[in-house]
Length: 103
Image 1 (cartoon, rainbow, N blue to C red):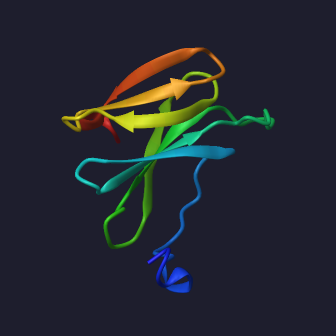
Image 2: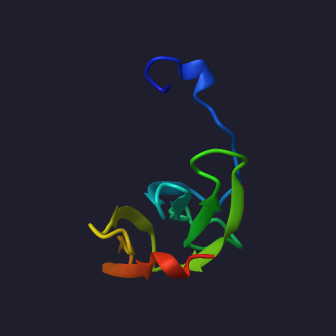
């Protein structure tokens, strides 16, 4: 729809954390994980991973947050779909998140 019908492509919206930059679709395409980078160091905000459910239909809902390293940015799902690898640019780390443990 983004290409053929861009005005009709929006399915819904949900507020997540500060300065989201990365996104990954997990759990059989039903859950989104958003990397909230907080790259501008907003007061009271922190870097985290926001978990949004209902990605393949229905209403979007914020299921919760996971702590992350500093400035989470790029993400990739493992070939078996059980792990989400997150590049924390600011802390120079790669973390592995168990998809089965997401909120």
